[in-house]
Length: 294
Image 1: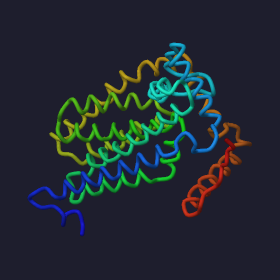
Image 2 (image 1 turned 45 degrees about the horizontal axis):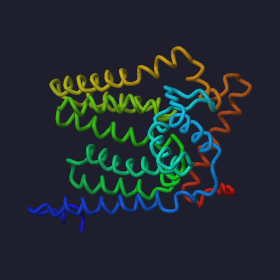
Image 3 (image 1 turned 90 degrees about the vertical axis):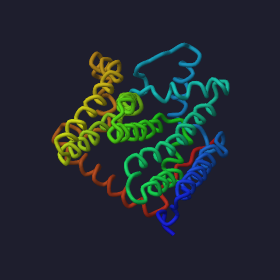
Image 4 (image 1 turned 90 degrees about the horizontal axis):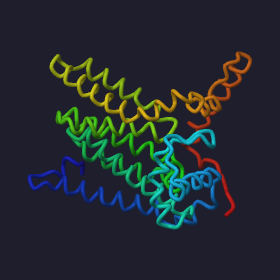
């Protein structure tokens, strides 16, 4: 029976969605917290570096806007993990615990974002529940949630940004738009790839403006302008830091980008294309092992 067949005047459909979401969150927590100190085996060297940096925040009053060490690191995750590291006495278990908590919150945020996007459509709440359930059991997200890596914080803030942005557009409440702008600005403090996040939002805004009538068009433009303005204010401290230290902005990009010399460019594009093809084909097999001794 489909979701719409469950809905009646007593709100049975919404009750099923609520119970379904509770089950999803329980599964999410189980997959991310069970045997967390022991699995994954060993301590990844990036985790060791992250633990050193987080302990500096906890113990040495270190308060960076951006961490220049280790080719550059955005700081949001380190501040989010600091209380957990402090509570467990500075061990790596606290860093992984912080990542697991962020992972669970991301699943809930995925439901909120999808519900905001398609909740008014037929079967929208069921689609949102499916999206959250998929995120709950998706192996890449489960694995990343069990490591102490800063990248796990990016999808959380992105999902919350989308949820608040769409609620602001739908309900025309300034508070949602202000929240979306603040979260969009904070996303820049999560991970390197977040710098591209405004691009799909801008494309979506252009699409909404193009298909709207005149009154809706001005409403959409004002909301997006408010969101971008708040985001710029929140991101301004890090933006000014990058203006003063441009090498901090480009160090990691230059390490993984396509070389500028023509003699190397074709070779690099060939390697890049091959990596994309292998990644696509790997979705149908067991992947690759990366064993680490404890």
